[in-house]
Length: 197
Image 1 (spheres, one colour):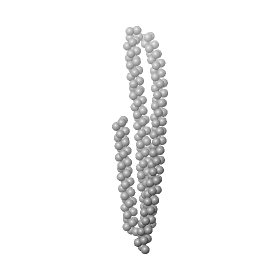
Image 2 (tube, one colour):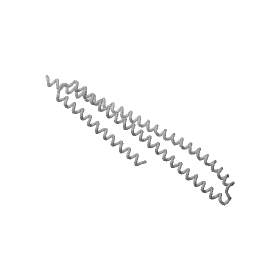
Image 3 (tube, helix red, strand yellow):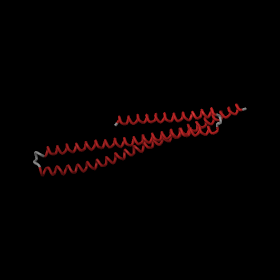
Image 4 (cartoon, rainbow, N blue to C red):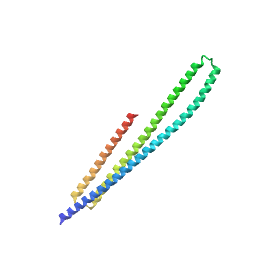
């Protein structure tokens, strides 16, 4: 009779374990899907913010160019009054060269600003994704350990309790390994971003 009860308790424990694993797996899948959806939404928002920043920068550049055109016309008129006709072509050429140099510097600055905005947003999105995945891993491990604790509370067999305690330690070790793997994965992504920059 005692062996039958133990066998029945062991079977119930395995069934509960299986049911718990199935629920945790389904929950993990739902959470991963939610994280993926959130990442896609953030990526779309990132693209919108980058576009908006570039539009603002383009508007400023257009206004600056129109002001520069007006200032250029005024300078040429002033040169006609101040310089001899032979000096005007060289002065206009220097003026145009200076204007082109400033435009080039403005465009390079704009490109730099664009890359900075993109990099900042990409790093922020990556960090948010990393934190979300770490939280999911920790929550999953805690849920599994709570399930094992519930089974331990109903188990009276010392050998079964020892096995379950060992499983809890395995969960902790797997969590540490998964967190380290994830950290390495994000470090590789970060290194790739730095190489691209």
